[in-house]
Length: 95
Image (cartoon, rainbow, N blue to C red; front, side, top):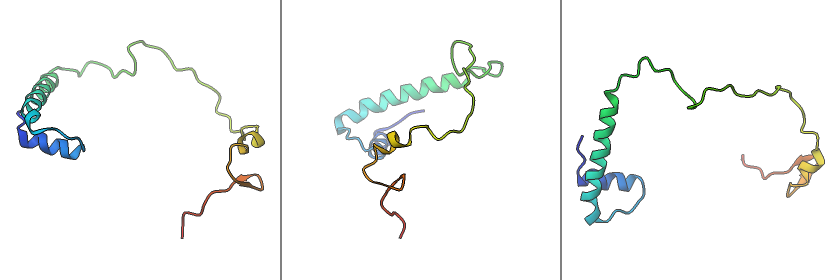
């Protein structure tokens, strides 16, 4: 796939980055090379490769799923800029 200067300018505009006019031609060549490499990766057969989450096979440690109140209401509310009756007070956001 080939990318031209106009496409680079459009991508730069969408990404909200300033790319000087003199750098657009060079950047178009680099982006085209990247897309060519990605097209090569699409040709690799990965049907027999299982999905991985890590390079090392291991099981995640699990903790018991227990619902609790945190145990320190006063400590948590100490961080509140304003509180009332044991709850955080926040500004009204719905009219």
